[in-house]
Image (cartoon, rainbow, N blue to C red; front, side, top):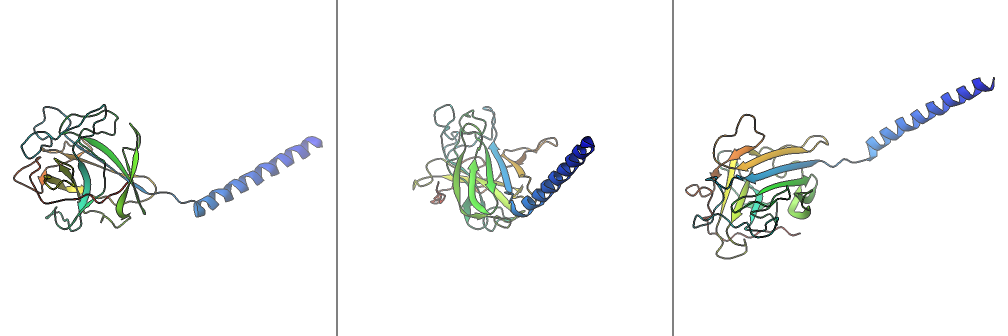
Length: 237
């Protein structure tokens, strides 16, 4: 008789535990928020022999700086407020990153002159931007405005701008590269959306996840800084 009672008690304890777990799951589903993130992987050609490495006004490859993970000339991810597939550079330039430099990488290994590679994580509904969040060490910057499901506009082009001096220097030269297929993705669900863009000439291989881009704001000087208007970064860390 005691054995039957014990089994009956165990069954009711199991059933009650299941009910509590079931209710807890739905309580979390109602109350726990899940961050939506968008991840942009962006880079240049990374072969020292490549003809399309980024260069300064004199055709010399942009400086990678010194150290195991370099800190050279500035390169920035951003977008134009009026950009369309037929006019990639229309409107005002809005930078989305700062502290990103030629020679730096998300892998923890520095690149040479004219090269870079970054992973940048945007959290939707915030102005938080994480740059190469794992190795060698991630850092956070603040975007000029909150990044949400409509800003930047999903499907609109984004771009990469590179400089041959500090962007606040009055004699700085720059150029901007984009492509009609470098589209800011729409975010859906709690799985991060990934975009892979590469400043490179040529055609993207069918098996590659990278989308090549080689349309320049100064179209007569590809991969080279030649525009001279004063341009100031507005992000703050």
